[in-house]
Length: 316
Length: 281
Image (cartoon, rainbow over all chains, first blue to last red; front, side, top):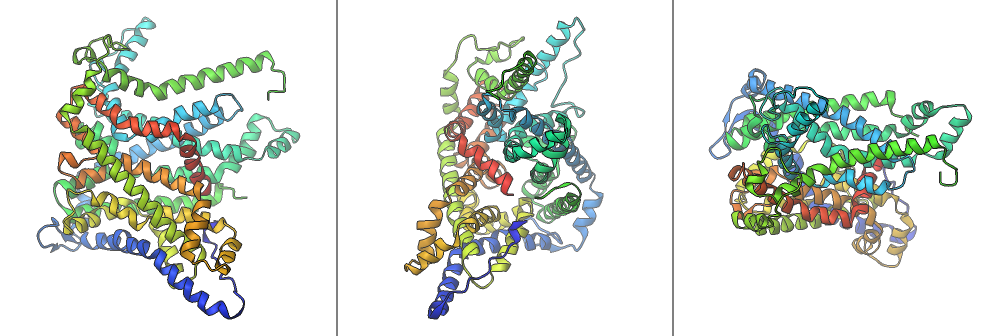
């Protein structure tokens, strides 16, 4: 990655050299001082601190009590954490691969030189800019068991084909359907974001490559397989990595659509579990341990992706 | 494409394509239309079965009612204040640090850059609790400070993004201005920042969306209704009027209209901003 290129100091001729170095030192420290303080107080310090409070029992108001590894032991035996872990993985696997695939297909459909591309792009992007809270509210209404428009649509479709409509589905109140319903809403919400990134990547592929492939007798599928996919693979990697990290941290839509991980904890996720323990039960120690576990998971997944990308990401 | 004559097959393929894209576009906007439609229905009509697509009588008074039921004006002002300060602080502090990292030599520079890359990987939930305890200790609970003050201390994503951009600006510009007697600070504000509009737009859009739509932080810091931004206010509205769907949809409409208006006016900036972040990432 070009990100790691260091900037070599340029030699400056003559006697100004010493004073220039002093000027740069002064301005360099001055300009970056807010950020250095920010890293210390809002990043590095808290990261270190969160590992430490993981070894304590602390409500953040009275003095902490050292409990060694008790929080970690609790984590491994907490059935709700296991549930949250399972639900989070369910959400990640249910939303990321289909979401990324759909957005790529959509980007390719929009990228075929058709008129009105900007209108479609704008429409697909609209859910991205709106808050999860607002759209989760309207989806809760759409999913309503008794008067929701989705169940009505299902009923009408069945009747249209002369079949007996099924019992209305309790989308958000049935443990079997709650997570899929939230996943569907989340895919809808994020589709435009990834599509815009894929679209930019597709437009960046040089047309000569396609022409060359055509000369070699490649068909539509061959061009996709041997030109498009490798050329956009760095962007695919970026989209996958960012989507995975985001999905592991899902909270907002669950908070609105399925308060407290209802029904029957079928939608309780890791971040929700952390939120409950930190800010409702005031168990800062245990909540920090949950946070550390989440960090380790995301870190492991990111490392795996960095390792795996060597096999499929093609950098020019 | 336009110079070629289209065969009937190509025409029907294009028609099919428009049909599919149009159908999907309808799916994408339908929840918003449904939100708007419900927000204008009477309580009784919202629960009528089968539901009506458009309200029989347009009840604009729902919007007046929501302003009576909830301090919506305060929510709006709070959101504007918090988001405005957050964007300003983030752009300012990130461009300063990014310029230092890209152009200046100072002790600890490599460590600072390495820390930036390392911080990019850490999910914010890890720092959430310690930062909460810090602000609680400072007596900043139930104030807006925790929501915007950190932005004035920059962020790893923004610093990284702008540093990558500044490195791409020819170094001669910097050196020539130095010879002319400018200070590095002056060069940043007079030469580099005006050039960095695309990168600043990207960072601004990301920061704006993240701050305006943030739920978790207002939820844990703000207790007083009058101090809540729109997201937390809306979530509170849900707990109070959970079954009054016309009222809630009116609230949701009010919360998304400002950002939708900005999006439609500046959509090029939004979309370009996201796309650049993806390509440069």
